[in-house]
Amino acid sequence: MPLLTGLHRYPVKSMYRQNPRQAVVEPWGLSGDRRWMLARATGRAVTQREIAALGQFRTDLDEDGALQITSPGGEQLRVPAPSAAEGAVDTQGDVFGSLFAAVEAEEKAQLWFRERLGESDLRLLHLADPRARRIAPDFSEPGETVSMADGFPLLAASTASLAALNEWLTEADTPAVPMERFRPNLVIDGTEPWEEDGWRRVRIGELTFRAVKLCGRCVVTTTDQETGERTGAEPLRTLAKLRRFDKKAAFGVNLVPERPEGVTGDELGTLRLGDQVTVRARGERLPAA
Image (cartoon, rainbow, N blue to C red; front, side, top):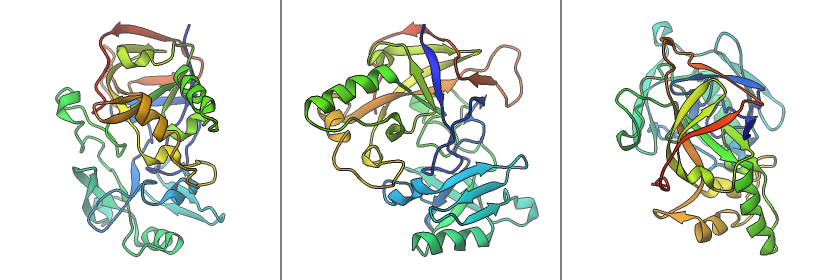
């Protein structure tokens, strides 16, 4: 029986992961996942694609919603969740052309990041209303929204598919890569390699998810998440050669949670390590773009 063996959330987009043993699922993703991000003056998201060092900033969330940040050098900062009602500046966020309403963090946080990253136009933004950003209509139902993640509420990856990829890499005398390179929310063990390509609906513990799209990968997969260093062309080169679909190098599957019958609030349910995974429906290979 396939099992959920990894849970990861990323309080700030492109920064270091948290590894809880359980996590509440909301319609737009894991609770606390990617509700903050760094952005340029235009609102465009800043990620490890352009600043690999972002992944070395550790983050945590207080019960009151404040963000705790630790720099690679050990300096710490606490950032209260901004509120327009308390004078915070409303602004617009932009994740790959998806525009949505956001709120600027206090000025102290902006200066803190600018000093440590050497970038004069950085801003820290908060997604105060997670209903502000629609999922791409081609892959969603009306009213479904997402956090500041690249495009979908959750990303799942399987250990079997990682093992298959690493076999290709080692056959080419290239070092294997860890799962962290792919920054998933959910890690699933006990499936066949690449079987997630054809998932349509999957039950994990007490919740059911729609599988809507394969995840097209980028240069972040070539970044060591523990050191922040680019390591060369792999595994992106091999994925582009052997897992190229719809002009994308694919690894992992994007999921959208379904609302359980009778549940009306933002908390749809809780995922826990060890939850059983059952595929409820399958189909042809999902699109990657």
